[in-house]
Length: 462
Image (cartoon, rainbow, N blue to C red; front, side, top):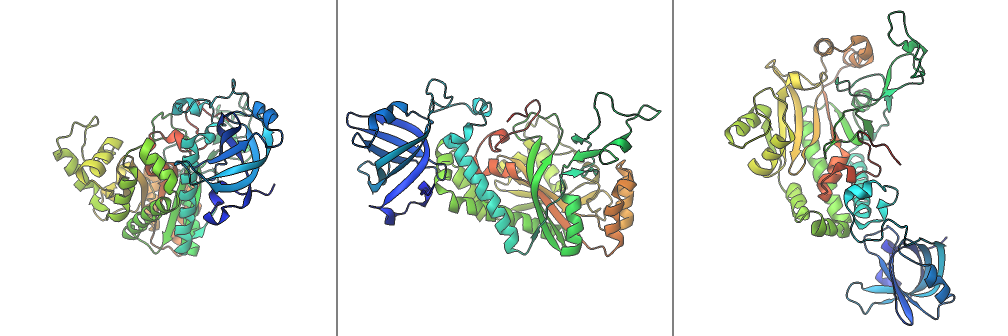
């Protein structure tokens, strides 16, 4: 059906006949006409429709209409006498696509808790908040591709099913075709995976990084952008079992290049959102987090602070702040530590480097001190870590030894180590948690509310 989206309407359309399609947000009946607030999801604003009782079928149609019903309206765009909108549509004809029983429709009230909306994830995109989240998420995704494409990166699709454990943590979802009630077993009782689909244990990926490195070591600069999965029994407001990651990988690059790219990426994408989602961001600033726009502007306009992990530990220990988790050199920083550095001490984003080798992944390049690796984490106010990355270990002997030290099987990574034997190059990359970026940009509190269909322990509906 040929129609105009509300977002596409321009001042030059004044006086023209337009057809709009959408869902009714509210309807108010007067004696001789009705007001309909129509929204099609293309923009935050709805369009006010004036339907006079002279419109064909008026009385019968008004009996069928309520909040949630879907309609098409053809009419003339006219200047609105009201202060809430600059124009409105004076209807000539109205067509009903789908009615909506008012007594059953869950979105009758103006305000619902986010927890309740998660239980009706199939309907929550119709709310103001979720519609705004979806548009900001879309803008961040588009800006991500724009950033890397403009800089000559190639977009690579890496596997979702893998036999490798990128992080070495073991918190992976298994993928199998075996009968889970009676799996085939060896004589020692262990499961016989040679009878499985891939003839070996397989899992949903926790990261596309290792596969991405193979392309970076041939095509220079690449990035991946896809779903990743972690089977951690975590119920925090910052974790999901299924989430999206942006993972650039750069050949002929070191940790400094990595930091520069991460900072530029965050500033570019956040700028894009402010420039292209002004109405949605105004909503978040007014109703979700007061000052979110100013907070984002501060990130865009301010150089990030760069500290070593050791410097950060000294700052935290001398702060006198009553942290729940004690701070000592060698500990893995918690969210409270990261947020203190970004929110209270530096009051701006911070990039930490040179973490202890024992708390970082096997693929990170060892520093000359023998204790730390060329890792980096980008910390931002409100969230804490939003990006994590490193310079990769490009030296074959050191990499092979680290694989053994981490208790991994060298035979599972034979192809990864061969990259270091055949034309090895210094290279670096990072992973940006996409949902954490949406969380940071919108001011929302729970990561489950910035992904269309959240997956977390005990929840895999819709």
